[in-house]
Image 1 (cartoon, rainbow, N blue to C red):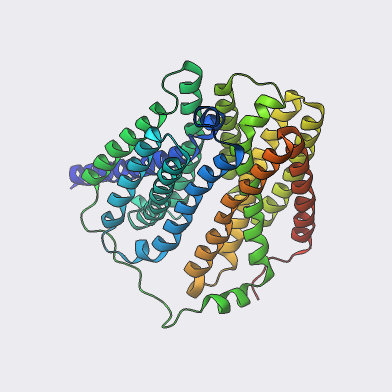
Image 2 (cartoon, rainbow, N blue to C red):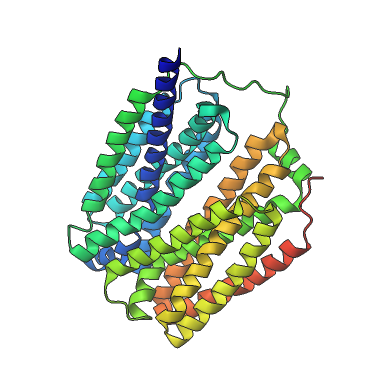
Length: 402
């Protein structure tokens, strides 16, 4: 009958909308602290290395959750057993961070939030594939990309506004995230479809071991993984050290404005991801490396001349590179991975990539030892050298499975 069918379609689309917003909120929790790091340093007497530890604790939580959830989320008949704990971890992590007043509690709160975000990423992606209205192959990836991009961009926008307006900047953004997370979790559970599609049956009696799968895919897999690791490592340094660079190198005294700059950077990265979905994967990868090298050159010149007018276009170029490198490499890994070991290789790919959370630690040591200006120039030179080497390797590599 037409009426029930129409009502069912509306309910299904409302469910996907709430599900994607839940993922968006968890990613807001990821990026919200970015403009606040100098404020934490002053308020709680933390040095740069301490701030990188807070950032890294979140990444550890995400990595642990993704590794633990990669099999569980795909094998559970009822994904709510993962969705509910993930929502609670996101909310509790945000609330705990709002009350943190020392390095230990802040790291613990970010670890909780990271566990929640990692679990939420896994379960939402699995649910979008399983409960796919219209059975469109592109819809789950598109919805997940939009949710992640908007969440990452909105996080520093909210905290930057709270900082600029002086509305309890260390607490109010995270209480907002926690409240939104709980409300969306409740709405998603109310709309959750009854039953669902059956779990996929394995096509092979024995999946290849990780070593066998890696031997089959060859060097291109490692190049893809370490390319995204590099891109995300650079972004991580922007998030953690960027507020100090903006203030001490470029003279930006209004800290809230840096939150808007990061939001714009992430928005460009998101638009780049959407655009690069339409182009050839290798072309996206190579254009990403070209723009990454250009961005590093422009930012190096900006830091040397202390010119914010060079830094802004440098970040914009870097935002495009961030999106292009992620899309190009992720699509190539999906194309290269054989079906019988696809899950193992994708899990290993993201496990490698998420090691980027450790990159700001040596950067923090460098800043504490030599100051922000010198450390920025040294780090950009190192990043540029590595980028040129990886770009050359990507140009010579034939991305085809053995």
